[in-house]
Image (tube, rainbow, N blue to C red):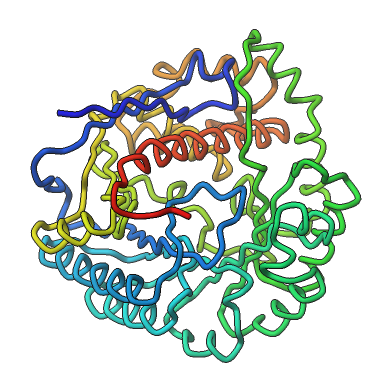
Length: 426
């Protein structure tokens, strides 16, 4: 068996945290069809990946291909076949997230896929990503009743930054972006704007300007991601925490919390005008999920699986097997699993110790004794009446940890992308 050994930090903001909370994802290529082990009485979260874009963004590391109409249509047909096979396998899904790439790159094919998914499964909520180029009001009207939440990747409204990150010519100026967004507010029940903070040339004034515009556009949600570029450092743990507290990133995060103080906190980096249960992060609110499509990840039964990246291989596997899995991790150890879940719960706002212990059949304060002590020592958490709450610095620390988690997943994508032999990425 050919091995891919990749380290992803599941509970880390940099090297100091990795030392106590690192987790290794030891992925091995599968040599025979993989069958999911799952509870047929349970409804799971479904993720569908659409790996096509007209243009590539310099900061995006997700799995994608240059758009070709015939290839894209064939791909959607294979996704629908994989949905049928998931139904035959006995899966139940109640929530769906469509990511990319550019999910709305072929609206008719996406519509057919959503209609089939809703026909096969009892799906109550659908979230979908979009670039600013695919938010035409006339087209989105066709998705009423099919999409509940549309996440638009704006990143910034500053024209100078848009030019530097090569989005000004692709998606338009700040003024054009605002006009496009204004035209679609109200068509889909929830419109969410994705903004990036800590961009290289971004200052406090630029960030406040971005947030003011987002609020004036009257969208239901605003999600603020930190720029996904971090350098591992060799510092003591306390030195590293002190570095984080003095960082520009922490200053900008505090500005975000100040500007969005009147919004409800969905999690440490997502905010809503009114409280909602529809989340921006499917990996956070769902500890188990199934991924469909090329390059999609699944996490089920304490194990990670990855679908084929090569489109020809993906088609062959979906046609001949029940799924398109090409690589799987070993089962996570109990401690690694609990570290990961603890991070997700803190990211969501709090950890109710008794409920957590009952759900995962552990004693949290024993199994993560060192981690909890460390977080208390640096004043990242408070414990009141059996509930662990992150402080403001704790929330930022969790944002840093989640950033490292996603960057670790990006490393896995980069490794798997090398396995593509027949497709061109650019």
